[in-house]
Image (cartoon, rainbow, N blue to C red; front, side, top):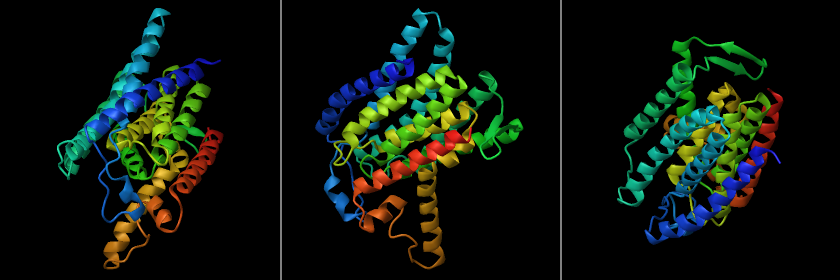
Length: 327
């Protein structure tokens, strides 16, 4: 059995244990979901469901990374550990921004949460720091893979840095918008991260294959509690975390443009919101979709939540097969 499979299974088990501990705690603290009055009426019964469940994924990542790091230190492979820890810190940074937002809304009862400008500033700081780490400390360069041409091109550093930061910010927000139905964001994200992990294995990037396996196991463990009817929601804590992980890994393996293929579902979810807003303004209040993001449009068209999750997940799986074929 490969080390990635062992790590994934271990992470899955740890995630289940963390979920069993964390979810009742969130329920006791009354950290419950607040549903929009203008959202789908079927969501009103979700009111009060524990959220901030992304904590489960974060705790699992920390615990398993520490365990894996101890193992690699003992066998003398310190290089993987030295590269694994910075990735963990950077990606958890996105989750912390989401946690602050969730905490203000759900614990401090501040309905606006973290101000959008502050949230974006926090995400921007983490993104710039991570890109500078990749280019200036790790020294991976600015070579970027073009899926259609199946070749790498070198981008000037002054162009690459804002481009990479944009990838990080766009992906975190895209996954955040995808989180709106039981199990949707966690299902789609776990498939995308699995795809990126497989590519890392193919390309021989051990720190990413290990990190990706940890995240996939942690997310699948969380998904056991997040499937419909969800016992917990990930909140911004989880969605910003997963978006940050997807984009961080894609940049690390020099394939950020592959996100446009394998993460097309979150991309389309984002576009649906943009189209809705523009159309609403241009037509004086008319709506292009019944509701945005797109998953709500399908809900209001008569699709059950499970059907939306299954269809979006299958589409993501097929797109990931296509993405792997493009490398």
